[in-house]
Amino acid sequence: MADAWTEKLDTYLDGELSSAEMRELDTHLRGCPDCTAEVLSRLQLKRAVQVAGKRYSANADFRARVQSSVTARPRRSSMRLWLAAAVAVVVLIAIGIGTVSMRQQQFARQQIFSEVADLHVATLASSNPVDVVSTDRHTVKPWFQGKIPFSFNLPELQNSDFTLLGGRVAYVEQTAGAELIYQIRKHQISVFIFPEEKLGGELASHSGVRRQRTFNVESWAQDGLRYFVIGDANNEDIGNLANLLRKAAVS
Image (cartoon, rainbow, N blue to C red; front, side, top):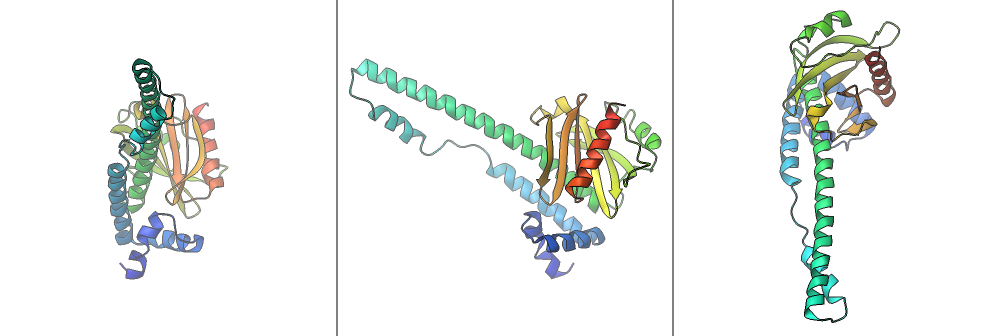
C-alpha cells in the first residue's frame, strides 16, 4: 500500500480532499483491497470515537444561569424568592431536557446513516459483495424469502442505465434487512431496505439526497419500510434510482 495514498485516507474520510483528489482516490480504492480494508478499519475507529465523544454532559454554565436568574430579580420575601428560584430551575431543567432529547434524536439519526455508510464501504471492500448473484429481479427478490421479515418489489431496469448485480442480507441496529447492489457506469450503489419501526422512527419520512462522508445518500419511508440509496454516484443518479424504487414499491 503506497504511503502517498495512506497519508490521504483520513482526509478522504473527513471529506476534505479536493474534488479531483477525491475522484482519484475513489478510483484507487476500487482497485486496491489493502487500502479499502484500511479505510473500513479507520471508519470503524472514527465511529467508535464519535459514539464516545457525543455523550451528553451537563452544560458548565447551567448553575450560573440559575444564579443569574435569581439574583437579577428585586429582593422579596424569602418564600416568594424561593418560589421564583424554583420556577426558574424547573424552566431551565425543562429546556435542558428538551435540548438533550433533540440532540439524542439527531445523534440516533446520524448513527443510522453512519452504519449504512459502513455497510456500503464493507461491500466495496468485500471480494464477495453479494450472496445471490443475478441481474434478474425475479431471481433476486425470491432469494430473500424466509431470510428477512418482510417483502419488497424491485424495479424494471430495461430502459434505464442501471444494472442489478445481486443482493445479500444486511443488519442495522441488529435488524435484518435487504441490501441490493446496483451499478451505473463505473459506480456501485447499495440499496438498503429495513422495517421502519425497527429503526426507532428517528428518521424523516423523506430526507432527500444528502452527503454522508464521501457518499451521496437518499432515504425515505414507504409502506412501513425504510429505504437507503447510497454510493459515490452523483446526486442525479442516486435520485433516479430512488425514484425507480418508489415506483416499484407501489406497483
